[in-house]
Amino acid sequence: MQVRCPHCASVFPSDRAGTQFCPRCGAQIHVPEEGQVVEAGLPPFAPGAPPEPSGAEGPGPGEGPTPALPPGVREPTPWERRRELGLFKAVVETWKASVLSPRRFWPSVRPEAPWTEALLYGWLIGAVTSIASIPLRVWQQRRSVDELREAAERLEELPARLRDILRPIVESAGAGTTGDVVAQAILGALLWPVGFIILAAVLHLCCLLVGASRGGFGATARAVGYAWGPMVILYLPFIGWLGWVYAAVLAAWGVKELHETTWERAVGAVVIPFVVVCCFACCLGMAGVGAAFSSLRASP
Image (cartoon, rainbow, N blue to C red; front, side, top):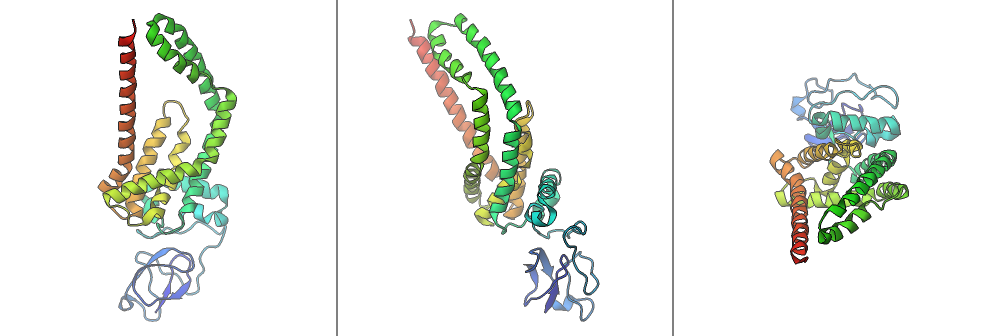
């Protein structure tokens, strides 16, 4: 039978009913049984999509916004349509959809699309944020140096053994320069893809552990990349940590929708790495405190 896509109006042959993808635009559509066609001679349409006049063409580049999609239909993200929309508009539209409208965004993301698209989007967000934050990070670094100098002056009030332990820590913490901050920002922007792959691999391992890996590594990587939008506030004082929190929420949302799993498993996959890191940090902290107390007891 002949099927007409409700998004690009292209007609293509299909030998089966059910959910499939348009070979022209890649949008996910639902093809009903032939017996469900309302008017003989007209191709079937996806449920919820209004019929278009015969011969109608879909909107071309710059001819207007994409029409609203029926629930459950997956399509390329605005970022993946950047050649059509333009780079700036594609980034802005993807950021707005993923951060401000995740309930509509994640069910529309295609899990089988190339995960490198999500990597490029997240890399752009991460690199721009890292470079743009240089003035703020320089100011924070200078403020920290002033505070560390005051702390170094107060070391004289502590016992000699504890002062010997803390002095190298304080001096090394205040040794950074403006050039170091700039170099760290640029290096962080360049190495972002490495961190992305490691993070996606760790998250996918957790997805395998909880049984939420239906879409494969590519789906997990796309969830990580498109969840990176909130990280634009990472370097802001007092609220920067909220970027991590909301990014984790969006990553869980992405895992749920792209792997078609439950909320419990999606949240579990995202939370496991945080729990492991927190436990490791607590162990290191307790070991450090124990070493400090041992040194104090051993001092004359």
